[in-house]
Length: 282
Image (cartoon, rainbow, N blue to C red; front, side):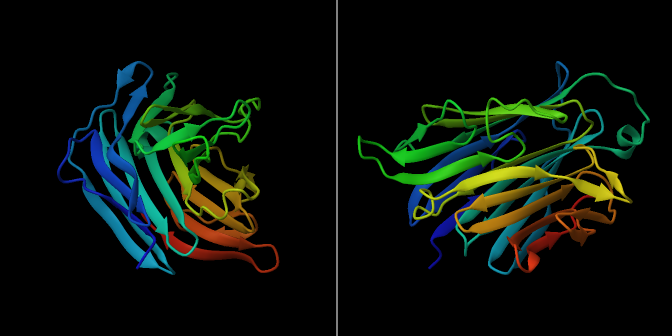
């Protein structure tokens, strides 16, 4: 039996939210609506379609599903859920994509693109925030509460004191039973990844993450074109890549790829070992 169960139902809720259920060893840790709010400046980009499933794939112990919703202003929201059963890792992402007319300079806009999502955390858990770090650890209640999972906002700096050097800024906060992720960009598209480390034996070990340089034809990609992240959880390291433009051959961490999405383990001796690679944008 799998230790980690994750599912969402995009057919039984409003366009702005989907029911999300995450359980670890038969104990619910997230249960409720996964909401979103996307704005261009002060203008809300409202849904103009229903959710549609665009990809579902299982490979090397990973389950992956992705849905799409069209928004006002020639934008799309692509929402994905990835479960890595072997490593007890969960990845939830939203990707706000501008259509070609916007990304190719067809429209010159000055307003920032902002994103806000809420996740409902089990009332049996409490958040332990850090004054210096951006991630949040969740424990069971009580003075001797045991750690259950850690949430890492990969697109944000690990340390709050570090000012974002690129286009993206934001916060990860928790209050009562709600986990809230906010991001904002001066770019045309936005990738919002939230990674959950669900290995309770690993939570006391070293962890860190860094944004990587993505290259194409010897040029560095902007954050609204393609992004890559290196994540260390204990002794295990991962690579996450997402393209926000049409397919192109790019390089990240010495690994060449043409996929829209890639999640991989990184071995310092053998390099990048893809676990799942998906072509979803288009």
